[in-house]
Length: 260
Image (tube, rainbow, N blue to C red; front, top):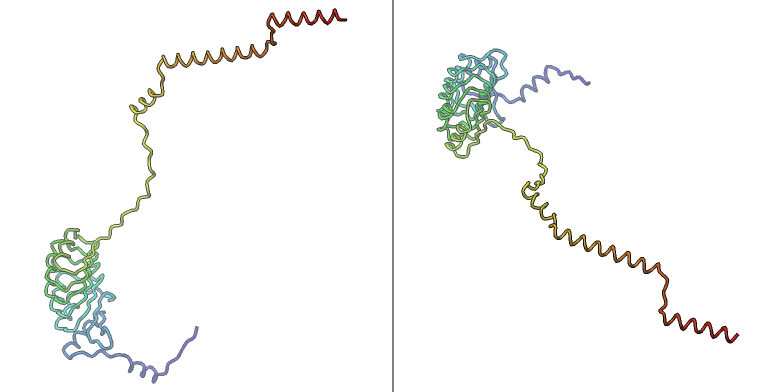
């Protein structure tokens, strides 16, 4: 593994090239207070001076006083309070952030009472309430935020009906609730229908022959057997000559003897 050593002059030159955060004098104190409490403040792009403020990585719990530093800031684009100990009362400090576009409140203890402080955020496009305690009643307070495009609500007290009503109130919004996975059933084998008892009996009756038919078949069989016996007898007997033929043969025999 290679290691590099930078001289003091090189470090200074590097720091000079990094983008610096340019803010108005009245916001400088707010940014310093946020950073002091463990929060982060960065410009969202080199050519965009809107601010990305995040408290979700703060080592100490975020309280009402920490969020009070947000008051008066005019360029906050994104605010991340994910997983913090923020309370409903603490969101009162967010109410005046008219420039706020993205707000992360997932995995916090926020309830319907806290959502009342968000009604003035007219530019809010993204709101994550995953894992909070909000319900359908709280969502009704958001219907006036017509810029909303994405709202995440899984693992909350919100119902499918509440999600539907919010989506209908804000055309073009994507309100995401609990994702339900439906198990796929394997294809069922086609079951061959067994004939009903009554039908089976009918088939059996069809196969059964009447007594008269059976007798006739028996007689035919006996006749055929007798005919075969007669044929066999005729084959065994030698050819018998008629009486006239016998006399003629005897006469010929006698004439042969006299000639001798």
